[in-house]
Image 1 (cartoon, rainbow, N blue to C red):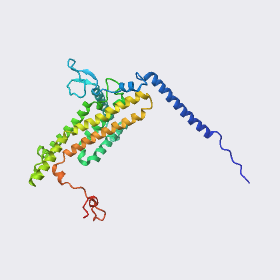
Image 2 (image 1 turned 180 degrees about the vertical axis):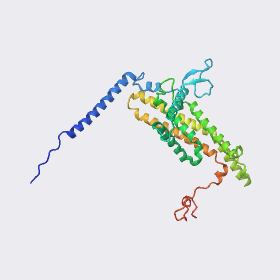
Image 3 (image 1 turned 45 degrees about the vertical axis):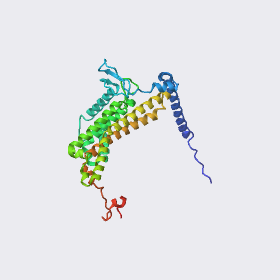
Image 4 (image 1 turned 180 degrees about the horizontal axis):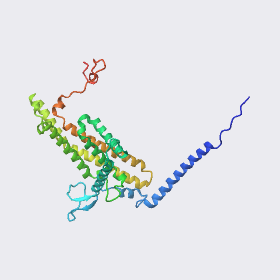
Length: 337
């Protein structure tokens, strides 16, 4: 005897499917409408001619002068010529805005410190602890005195990298992404350079620190060893002056190129399509800030390491629970022989 089956509710799944299809159709329609409005009201001159659009978004390397402090002297016309012209540029204005925002956020968030933090204090502590943990992971205990500098560099460079995303830098003549200006990145690199060598002199003393580069101790073992040590030290000394150059141009090149890419893609397709590139540029900006701060930290930690520690420090040896196996021997060529 067969049982009578209760018919399933009619239309419930169908209604859900129709509702989803309707939402998807409305979203596509809204996308088309917004694109049409953007093309009508926001398209650059010459659109959709690619050549005209690209030329309009190729940003000049020298920043815009917002306030000329020396009106009588000629303004720089080429980025390839070093000229001194006192002025307040669009990148300086943007950097001041970022500094003011950071000071305001921390002043408001930390105005009432307590053991039971509120939302603002908790959020700021989470950001600080994230970067502090990253710095300690790189340098261990020796990195602790420089955590404040590391966090400050990360926050400042990240926000300056995001200027064109947050306040439409590169699209407003008075505001430009500070790190897309070679003057800003050179200033940050010179700060890293000065900090590195000041800490080296302060922690080791002039004689020990300069001895890392001008090492005459090798002559005690013979003329050949002495010349090799001196040659290597002189190369390291010269390389110290290339570090700020590489720091400055790496940061400048990534942000300047990224700003041009965003401008060109936004002008060519107007709306919605550039969104993934905006996310990519935000990610690149954060990564470049972390790289700059990490390299600065490692340069400082290398500078405060004495030449004696470099020569005689041995890798940490790990033993098995039985205490009779040297883990280092397993990975060191020739150790097991």
